[in-house]
Image 1 (cartoon, helix red, strand yellow):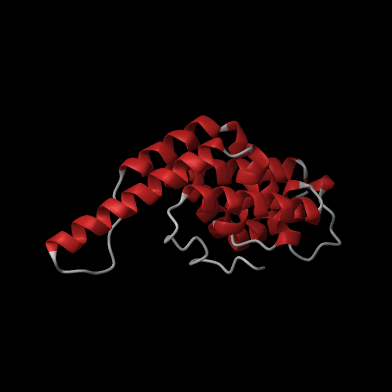
Image 2 (cartoon, one colour):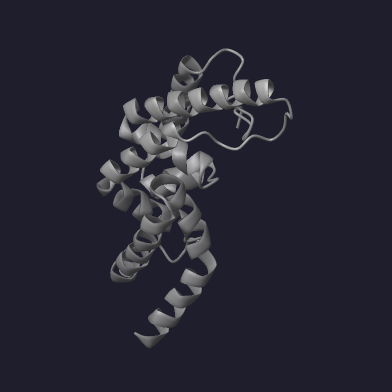
Length: 181
């Protein structure tokens, strides 16, 4: 049992920062700390369910985190709504008129994306956020959610289409990640 605790200490040191980034992107930094702690407590309790033949425990831990986050959906929804009201900082533009237009556009994009996430079916939202926030590939997402890779592909395709449908034509939805993966 002491060896198990030491091994989990190594897992925590290795994977807690990545899990925290993912959770913070969904529910904010303060709540993310609690979720990450809960992930490792639950993982330790369920350690006999983990397939020791897998090299990387991170997808398993992301699956636990996603399940815990589902329970916190109201908090996550409130965060998305708050984000929609916040104007993100801008990269450039010294002219006040240009900055005002850019801020208005950015605020509108955040509002549209927030509304799309809010209306998305749970599986599509989970797949999209694991892809975008946790930077997982299809196989890792499938492992995390316990679903087939084909289901991940179709859910991500539908989520991306939903975002493309709500964003203005000149918005580049694929700027942060290549969408042809």
